[in-house]
Length: 447
Image 1 (cartoon, one colour):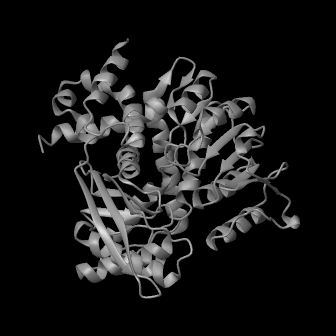
Image 2 (cartoon, rainbow, N blue to C red):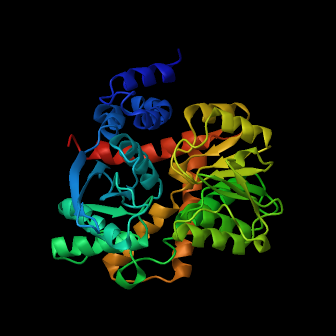
């Protein structure tokens, strides 16, 4: 057993959370531990501060009951959480998701990853994640509003511009952020940048909706530039149909790529000659209405492949933008057979450990989500800056700042991940994020 494996094994055995109870959290921590423990052990200050152990144990886990009334007058009860992982470099920052699958394991993994992602942006942002096991499907607009108000009623004391700044995530879009912000403002009797992703009329930022998808493509463009290539003519597979997937598709098209797919849980929308902006906008409309994409109009061109994933289609680049662990070892083998040479993660941890191992063994380059999809939180940070200065920036200014941030993230990651023959992006992202967190944690004493 080499030193890296030995250190990782010892560290993971001492983790308070059990792997069978919190598998996603363990997967995320172990992936980072393999890359950064040697860095920690080789720095006396980092080792003394036990930086990774501090990050692997959240500062605070809030768990609370949400009681609300449906349209029939019946009392409904849900469980909500906020995992405040670390505020060593700034106020807690991370999204809220409403979905029946939300549990503490998922939120701990996402909060841990968020710390590294936020550190890479260079902005003063800590890491957190939250949400509830509430299912908005089939609920009326009034019911969702009442749920948001009840959720924030429980969370409001722990949220504020310099304390914890949530944003949206799965099933929490601009509409829900508006309701959450209104409830926070009422409970705290204050107006401030306590959430990001707000409407433009009350402190939101231009480009926030597009940011994660746009940022993904800016990072991908840097990867290609490092190889002396561009997106022009590249065949791209994208999973998902939400904001990240559709805006990544539109930006990639604008740079000359041929985007072949989008997808949902029922199957894949496939256009052999490439999707058009009109087809992508049709998907966005269907998504906004809560509808599937199984029956595209013939005039748009693509066909729907029921029960199919995008990864079996021949392409150059894959952008998984749906959810965590959506690509296992079987899907990774499909990507290799399809000729894919780059996988850039638009979702958080969409590759299982086995999938990543399979792809790396075949020299497929993987850009981890903590680097590649940092555009969303980057613009959230820019929204916080605008709120603090009582300013509203133009779309052009925000987009230029986003591009600069993603370019700088790539520079950091490439510097830390450069190996003979290329760049290990996962290792580079983990180490670059860790160094910034470690400097802050070790400098602040035992707190």
